[in-house]
Length: 175
Image 1 (cartoon, one colour):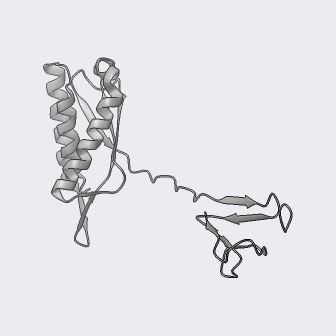
Image 2: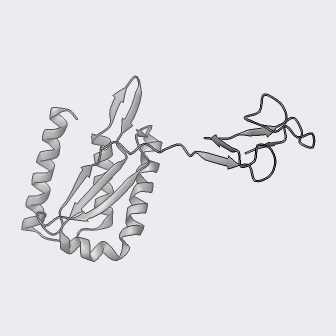
Image 3: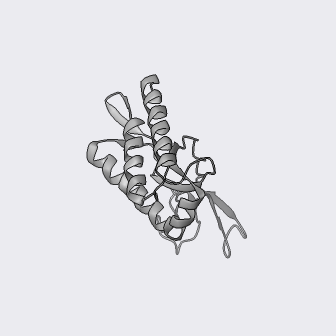
């Protein structure tokens, strides 16, 4: 994020908090949606002609606002995430992660104020599934064949699991 963008964000947060303190009003979901879209726009970067932005955000709100919105929190979080997906797609911004929005209470915020925090922690890498096929009958007895994504089974030598059985076809099955 550029220095100018950080300065602009700090000024906007100061003004929002000041107005929320001076003129407290209930925070509405539409206000959060607009702030999320603005944050995506502010955090968009361009690399090699491709515009990208983070996809995971936390919306911090006053505990009173949180309590009032909490009954619909799961629905709102899904809708805000879907809004980010739609809007970013329309304007040609690729989100780095699937969009996720989480609402959280923060004591330091006045009623009616919010703060959108970008979560840029790397996602845990998903382990590729691995499987083992265990021979129940046949040769070799209790043989175990490990594989990760798929395995071809048959009599032919080009299979991952070769079965020396004349009743099995050359390419018998694929898992």
